[in-house]
Length: 408
Image: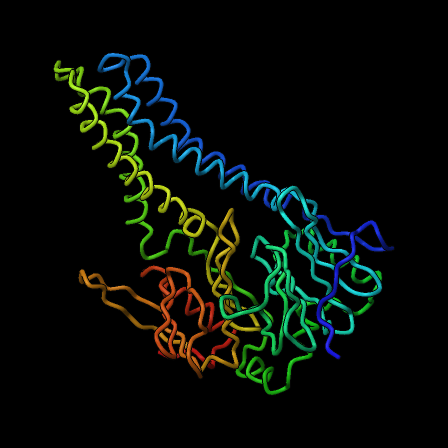
């Protein structure tokens, strides 16, 4: 009988190691509160204060109508934050004992909790997914059989096409997104009760089939050299996004101030109730539209500003976007056995600009994942755009590890 998951035990109920993950989202929540205060709370206070201090009509009631959409946004964000607070602040972590791993989020207030048990008899190995420079470690729990346990906490997920670990996994697996210190603690706890279950990258590579390792020894450069090219800011839409968010934030702030400044500048204060409603209603609608646009653009901030680039080592080529704030990160591995060649190429944009790119030709179709903005998958080719002056540098990095794959 296949046993994948059972009722998880509380960390106090058995002789167990405990990797505490309770503060994992503390930084993210602080950033979300800061953004809410900056883009919603502050304009709400300014608009409400202005309406009360400088009423355009008797009693200032029509002026306060402009503040109603802002207060609605404040209440919405506050409700969403309060709703998710127990889930994020509940005691949670990974229990490690002689029976296996327990992935636990304890119940708190209206959050019912989540738990999943992974017995050792179904764990093939625990190992890191990638070597540095990734800022957040990803621990892969390789399983003998699936499906993966249900009821996973938010920091654990089943391996799917959105992420390809290095070295690749040839069966069902769990991904545990852990900071470096917590990953090291998990390793120590697992080694204490199950010696040998943790494997380093070199050990995992040695266990791969001989035919998968053979290409790494081809050519004169069979060294274990590793290269990293930083591509932060190279996302195709980075400049357009930067201009867009600055323009949208500027208009949002302007629309919060103009309704109370224009009547005094024009020296024609509104006296009719419906005139005031129409005037402030128009600005309220425009403000709501641009506030939403600014919020949506802000969501893309960590994806574009996080550490990212191309790593080239003995295992293959890895496209990396590190985890930052609410962005979970992306790491797409292209192992050497899947690469048929690497060559210089070029792409012409619709406006006529020519980009020099490094084309990675694959033996099959590109992985079904969301690629970083500086990499474009097209059938059996992935085009990496490091910037025209750096294309040759990237080709030299590949040639240093696998000269037999680099074409002219």
